[in-house]
Length: 236
Image (cartoon, rainbow, N blue to C red; front, side):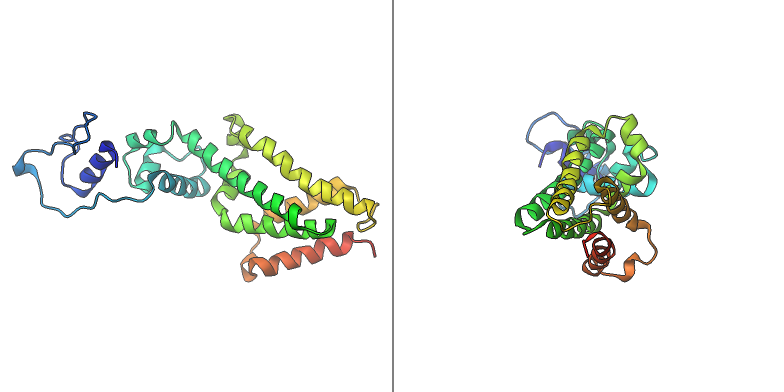
């Protein structure tokens, strides 16, 4: 553990006062206040992955309050670290947002790549993409909310750049499967691929707000969405 991290632990535990803690870059623990100022406490210097904790706490706050109105102090309080210590892990609040978005879109990419590699035909690809989209929404509820609700903030702060390229690649998975399905006579030619793609995509991501969504498991809901969309798109 870094000495500054140990300082945070000791101050939070009450073993030293913040104004008496020092950090001189040496491996030794910080010097405590005079003996009469110390309170006997039991502390543990072991801590979970700080970076991951900061990301988790920030994601929850951003999703609930919005990125713009969430302060660095609030993130520090939620993560259990002093706000000044956050800068050892992330240069700014926006750097945290960027990291969350990268992890979010990367997971989508990996899942979609796997679907395309293992599917036997275009319809199976679409079934897999629908299912994996719903899995991602379930596994990443906070980044999903940030991406949906804070797009203006993300755009204005150049935070969409890291996800725009991968997002286009994600779109290609859909469009490729649709086009191949039409060419093979599996899907209807009279439904424009772009219209079908946007209808499915927008519907799936909007389900986070549907009041009846929680009545279904992810697998049950995926089967329902697959039936609704593919039964009308498949050639009779």
